[in-house]
Image 1: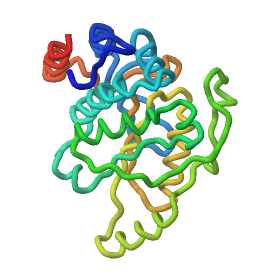
Image 2: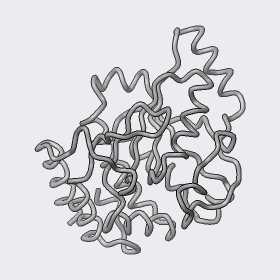
Image 3: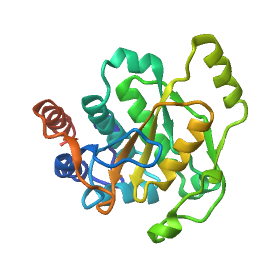
Image 4: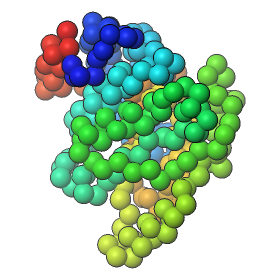
Length: 240
């Protein structure tokens, strides 16, 4: 991960500490958003992981998201991705979309950076099927006011027609892994899943860099397994 780190923003030691401290709370969640078959996270949204995500998002620093996306990809492979060759040919990675104005204002599309790093780590192709209508920021809003309507997410022009052609030729539509930075109420990911199911996607996994403590009800599988810990230790050794 050395190439992900520079001199501005979080230091090497801070990123290493975030990865090390969040590892015990990474895994396959018991709970997943409506319409999402399963949800994998790289940690519960608390410090130092929460600070790392905020720094990346509001300082327009893509390095934390590139590092977290790779880490999330490893956790997804450990929890869900078997056999890997089948996933790579039958699935697609999709970032939860941000509105272009918000991307411009922040100077970064953090979900896109997460999803791109996730796709590179897993080898699953990335697609851009959805777009988002303009709406107020969800930062600082309570759970009820954060809930996103399905109409706030739209399918990009021509995608539904393309998927229909693929279905008629190959008999199916690729499954999708939805990638986002934080799951707080699950409404955003649920809205995306609802739209994807309307256009024929029948299998949807979720992958989030973190989940809120209120959302997290526990884990079916956690990344305290030795192979993942060894991977983290090797990555941390490379950036420390």
